[in-house]
Image (tube, rainbow, N blue to C red; front, side):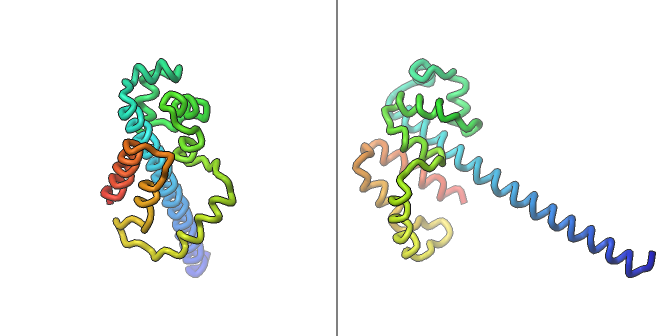
Length: 164
């Protein structure tokens, strides 16, 4: 093969390697985002359980799920199934839709989501570590949440902002 042919072959390998690196990078980013979501859900469940003054064993008995598995869910080691999320929501006297939304499974009215989007688009971009305007205010204004639930949500939300 000529020198030019060799260069082309090496260039092709470099492009393939770059493409593979890009796929790996995207995969890692998706896994990190998923992990953060599972951790947030687990933190939310733990906070709600603690506010309800329930031990893991008590909640396990109420949900018919082992306390070991519930502990793993709370620590973000497992993404619970729909059935488990529903039983946890029932045990904690939470709306199942809120729990599903917290797990990242959209169950809301598409029109309600569309109405919320323009307000988010109109808001200026927040700097790193600075919450978008209205997030904490929205939590505080939500009449469906108790004062303890609001405090737990704000605590989890702020803890994620402070991780950076």
